[in-house]
Length: 365
Image (cartoon, rainbow, N blue to C red; front, side, top):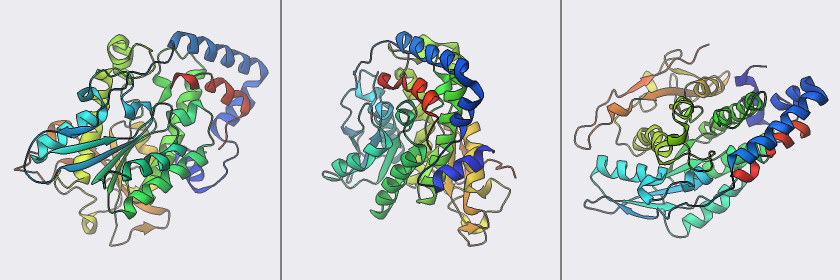
């Protein structure tokens, strides 16, 4: 079964039984499981003790006339900025500063993300945020803890989709940074690294399908930091060797910022805005296919679109793949209309044993 089909099945079912890790567990057998269990325990010791140095990045960024733009951040430790020491080093702080610079306005950031959060915690975080603000855009980063805590993937995706639908019902925009590729974590050895990669990528693809169906847009974080982590692990990892360092967060924020700007209408008219001109095969295809492609290409945005005035085709919701270039960020005074490159789309529950092994890392988040 290909990733697009697996992701579609996860996103469309309430109880996903079997799949990637289940099949892998059956193939590994008792001996293989013992190896994976040992690797997970060793990796857990190498990762180091959890720590919480998440700075309080709530507040107003930049300057300018008028009411501030409201950005709400939800999610897990990466969204909270665990490992950063200053507010301007978190993903939320960097995105808020960037939006302010581009729009020439103040940006007010409210961060309700919680270290260790799973997708089931998003609705509670949203309710907390809405007590004080009505956001213009909500940024969500979630999924890693659903993998390490062995949460049923269909359940995790359902919680994310419900949260996105509630946000869209408010008239707010949503940008979701999908589950990172846990196969890039340095202490993981094979075959545990391969299993973690497959499970996290399948979850990321299913997240994209659910979010786009609910009217939001996603940015694939995937192995965005993989090469940098491999080349400079001391610079890109924080002291626990599991969470990103400020440099790692800056890399993730650079991928999210263009999509947040597009959601706020600062980036110009992207392909999704030019729905009547969108054509199948030119960066446009069924959302499940787009989701599978985005997983392979970190930094890729997937957004809902239309083909011939229709939002859906025979294989589901139409979606557009966009690779937004960081060097193409328009100025607030002179936004450019062609700053996004369409990308070609091309034409459950884990097995208890392997899930338990992956779960050895759960306490690290």
